[in-house]
Image 1 (spheres, rainbow, N blue to C red):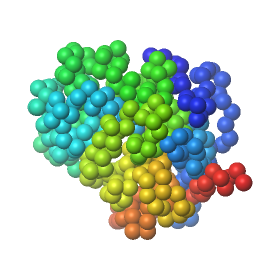
Image 2: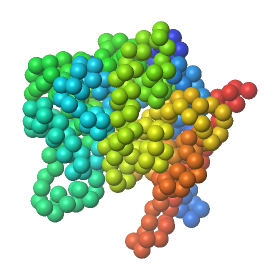
Image 3: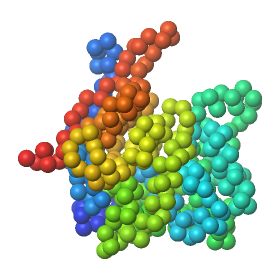
Length: 384
């Protein structure tokens, strides 16, 4: 693995080279306060960026140049490799099956059956999955049922099994070794890495990499670059003819539409904000979380509750402390979309338990609430 960061496009400055010297930063702003009967018990700090297709900042709070590991927010872009190789036709893939390859699913039976159906048609054994099974499934009801029945969760219930399926299918399609698909030098990982590099406007050898929790590589970029990539996911056909990313548009359109059509595949049916956001604002946004409280959102073109802009954009939000039982990420994500005019009052009501997550005592009484407390001003207002 290399320590050289991804090369930025002309629309954005380069990521600083990794070194032992830390770049000077102002204090990260507070986004969410955990409040118990008027007492602030803790705070969650973080950074938020909204950018357009060309990387121009629309809204920001904190540091848009903060470098983060993509973790699971990378997944929609990696599926490009399989689609461009002819995977849809070769394996007769349905939209829901494409969606689960972008997911961090909850390991529910619907997710397992979907991946098993793909593997059956491809002639791939689920026993080849090398993503592990620790802490899985994410869905508490499914985990309780498995424990009751004395069943151990297999790797297919891991939240990244859909991502790993991309490499296994590529390997089956191309005749590559299946057993070692997860290794960085494997051709399927090389293809995946190339798709990611193209989406972010850089070259594979210039990617800054790290090891993800499921055993494959992840990649580091600035928040502004993640927002830019998700703006592209929101409206791929809007890419200019001279934009080198334009060749990705057909595959990304398929991926975006698959995610929009199957939000329950992206997360799950219980306590998964990505799924709930997409259901509360159908055909309006694609939401994808990554570990350590990173969330990226593709906002499709359309009118907003505030302002007059209707163009697509992308958002990237990172909670500095990893989220605090997800409450920091939940509250800040919903509030960010509210302030950006993406969610209307009805959607906010539907998402109330995420907008102000509550801690209950054993008798069901509210002990504490997580309250988003920030102002996400348009960049033009900040400059003027």
